[in-house]
Length: 110
Image 1: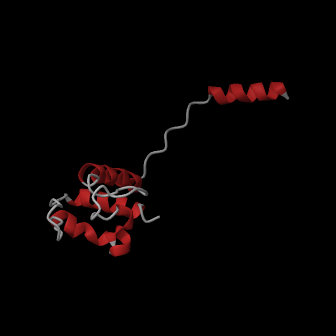
Image 2 (image 1 turned 45 degrees about the horizontal axis):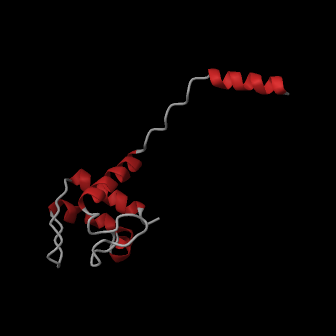
Image 3 (image 1 turned 135 degrees about the vertical axis):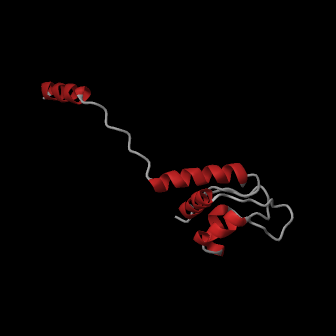
């Protein structure tokens, strides 16, 4: 029995390592969207699955899907988001960035 285990361990050690699992396009979009959120939005909004927004008036990103369909934000993100309060800066993202941010927002719905 011990010989079999040693033989099996030797065979497994001799095998080449498995290649890393490539990130799917969706996972890449989510990671890029999270980076955009962290860079541009986190000083006011809670951008993760937990925690309070640093600015009380700024809704947590995990709740945005309850207010409106986040997949419809593409145009607003590329043309510039404007809100009714003066403290929110206007952001404009290129279309790929907008889709990345939307993918991240959708990932928070789970």
